Image (cartoon, rainbow, N blue to C red; front, side, top):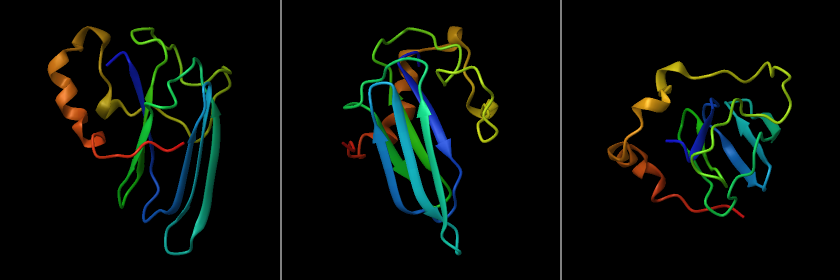
Length: 120
């Protein structure tokens, strides 16, 4: 899938989830856990996204964000505009795909987003 980026925020029992998609950044905030700890992040993205086609889905264990690239097929060497290492960010190698492994059939795996409304 060269046309999108997935980001998962692992926050159990999230409440009051707010996701904002902008051309070159996105914001995330929620309350999590039984003690309602506030989680908040704003990320300046490496390249532009299509904010109208980007979505998110909340589960009891996490909040999964689907960022649609403004230029499909263009590789991003990293998620963020800056090269600085973010302590809270890591690659999920369980869901890592090699570029060569791409296939149209895999689009079916992402139907979970078909029932997700786009946040503006």
